[in-house]
Amino acid sequence: MSAAPLTALAHDSWPLWVKTSAGAGEPALNVVEPESVEDVCRVLGELARSGRAATALGGASNVVGCLYSSEPCTYLSMRKLNRVLAIDTDNCTVTVQAGAYGGELERELNAHGMTLGHYPQSLEISTVGGWIATRAIGTFSGLYGGIENTLLAVTAVLGDGSLVETPLTPRTVGGPSVAMMFVGAEGTHGVVTSATLRIYPCAERHVHDAWILPSLADALALAQAFVQRGLHPAMLRVYDGAESRSLLGAGAQGEDASVMIVAFEGLDEVVDAQYGAAERALREAGASACPQVAEAWFERRYDAPAFLTRIREPGFIGDAIDVVAWWSGALDAHSAIASAIREHGASACYAHFSHFYHQGSSIYFIFEVQADDDAAAAQRYRDIWRAVMQTAQRLDVGIAHHHGIGAVRRPWLQCGSPSLQALTGRLRDAFDPRRVLAPENLTPGVAVFPQAQPGGGVNP
Image (cartoon, rainbow, N blue to C red):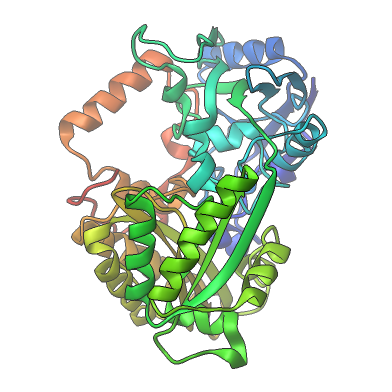
């Protein structure tokens, strides 16, 4: 097991950290690389006995400050636990270590005629363990769901160094799903060392297209009909006017026009029927095809977002904020949150709806700030995040969809009922009584947003 010269890996891609890290005087960091499950058990056991803090480190692709530490912490880099342990094409499962990167796993599955169906934008730079920790979701969630729909079982090490293996069966009624208690816990319940996931035969056929609808309201109404009436495209994205204009460029068709990208994949005859039904509904809604937009999106879908590639520009900062809204409030939530972002100093704000459910949809806001200097940009960044979280709570909108909590959402996570917070605390007592894993000082959101006033709202 190697140690220490890996401290550069101990931060994720949180824009505020990248922007303000120079000369920040961070505490000493210790990064170790376990080479086996036994190493993980031993390290956590030693840390528990000495009262020191630890957290797991995957691909460090997260953008919300999940790895931001204000005090000394030991990071367990999982990158050497990266093997595919078993592929079972008969039962459609793969067992893989937590440090495996998504792109490498997908290519190995493809060689066996299989796919995971989990394609986040960060596919090449994120890991299986990170997906589980943050309840990740991929762009084809309409067909394959999120990681919670894919996960069957885990092997994990608890805060005291003990090993737990959850049952692996097609379905069980033997009590609560312990495997699900690691999903979205951001490392607080244990370090996942391997997982067994559902896989699928590679699709016989894939089709995708883009369409322009008269307005965002028209596009969302059609998306709702697709989902609630059982059409369920493998991928469905609806863009607001601002982002639609950026996609269409000179071909933009008015301020209110909304682009929809829709994709289906699977058996040839099924895809024909699905796409035929979608196309009829789109034409009846007054949509016009713009296939070049879909082709461009698929070509660039794994590219790093501009708010990360431009982060070193003087006075610039940007980010993406994902929330989730009920159908009945989706349009109002989009309008109110976009207005709050602009009113608090954004030079640009775009939004799209990219994951859809029977009850509602995610909304993904991208904002950019151009200020006189980096300090002013960082302050506007904080103001925007605070305004979005407060607006979401006021409108009964979930404050997170798939990027996780990290430092940016921590102050607003405490908005649930006192009994729910107490139950969450008791769960942590059971999994990690000494609070070794992902301790409170790891993501000190209150320090990031000192005027935060948590309270109210629903946080699914």
